[in-house]
Image 1 (cartoon, rainbow, N blue to C red):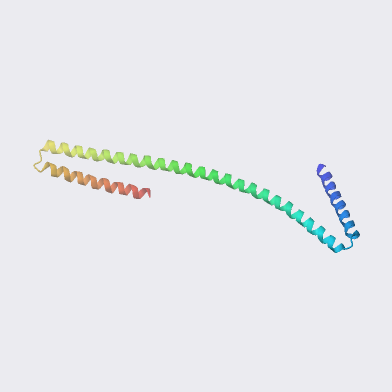
Image 2: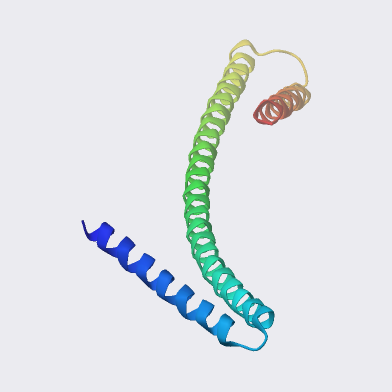
Length: 149
């Protein structure tokens, strides 16, 4: 009901404005010029109103997009942090397990040498084993890094 009243008021204002404008056009000595001025003035007012509405809508949509971008960035950053933590933890555990295995092999080798009194140059044997273990460890680390990439 309120809408009907508003529509009636708007129609009445438009009719009143047109009546006044038409009266001015007929009372003028140059009706074509007055009509042209009225048209230009009305056109400029309409353009201003539409431009204001478009600007308001554009700003509202821009604000929505900025908010959505911020939410997406937060989500991506959280996922990156989670993945980085998981990868780091997994790599640390793998390196620890491998290191423990290498230490165990060295201990076993040392005990075997001590217990069996092998007649070879002890230092050469240890150096060879250390080099072998370092090579294996290096290859394993390279493999881990390649798998992560």
